[in-house]
Length: 420
Ligand code: EPZ
Image 1: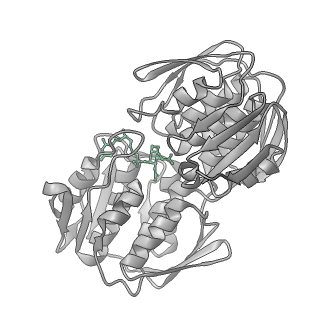
Image 2: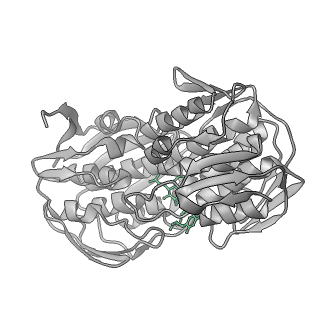
């Protein structure tokens, strides 16, 4: 079994290249189902979730293969519209394939994507929107039987700015007749990447980054070569690693406009954060300062995916910081593990109160989820002694090479194999 061995207590110094964005490439891979011809996905991160998406595409009869850092996808051979329960369970966000399969095939069969470590992950907004576009969806019995002889574009209003629902409906709308407008759409940068990808394939999508996205349906999309945007949450993770351990680091390719709420908090904590066309530089001397309450919110608010890693970076801060997790019900599972290192964190419902302590001590930790696992690594960099982190499959879902990346920043970290 693989584990990470981290020896903390020393400042970082180095430069890391930021991977392609997981939460951008997953909907883009689903969108390849809308295209005729080959798609070259450049800067595609090698992640377990990408592998799962490739298996889904291949199970539908499509071809997908790596060529260096690019994934070449050709969906001409599509011969199915069902995703197996096994594949659906491998990756919770596989629901993102529903809209594209419906648009391409006129029908789709898939099981309800499971919940995940973060709590229930309902897809009612996805299904309601697809029904409003004309799909007939029988969701009794845990299976989704979907039919859409034709999808008709119209105005859709989301009751909350769901990222996945916005993406699913953008893809379905590409296959609808006429124009669709999604109101109260999510504004995350990954939505903009999906819009740019669809337009590079000959689509006509506009408004991404605002709350109203307009999609002109009925256009035949062709293949293209597209470069995935840098992963803003991986960038946030490594900024927090520097804040946690102290020292300085350069994140090549990171775009501060995608994570300005994170850099604002790190500046408040005393870090010197500077952006350039090439990336983001971050320098932190000594212990960070506690910051004003951190409330997670849909973009452009503070990203829920950075909550755990920022918490880890503030465990040795001077003072007390209040966190409020407003997006997911169960996103403090990393707290119990962090307190095993000597952290002082009190959780009450959606609120977590972090009181900085002088020292953290290395110990054996277990990942609970993707970003919680990354947070354990961030905390271990500031801890005295060594830390073993197990169940690192969670981390491999979203980080292409967290060991190599942190080593590039000067961390003493290794992936080791253990008997158990
Ligand atoms: C995306 O998940 C990301 N995943 C998540 O990143 C991210 O945390 C989340 O957006 C919020 O930014 C991918 O892009 C693959 P939502 P998604 O739909 O689309 C509720 C990571 O660590 N909701 O915006 O599932 C839902 O329960 C992952 O990289 C409904 O109630 O997020 C949640 O409370 C974790 N009904 C809230 O909305 C629905 O139909 C936000 O969910 C859909 C969502």
